[in-house]
Length: 72
Image (cartoon, rainbow, N blue to C red; front, side, top):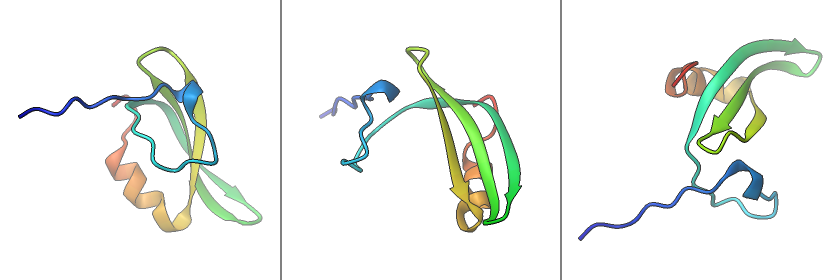
């Protein structure tokens, strides 16, 4: 049996729901030092060409740098 995996476009994401499945490519990433602490920021694009700016705090920074390298 095969299950059909459906990915949602980035334009369909809404903040009231937290169970989304997206497939993105990392276009650009950088580390940013703020007065609140370090953050890891990135620009992501989906297969339809929609882009989104995302960031994570220091506690998850190294995990996401390893899991989502730039260009993949």
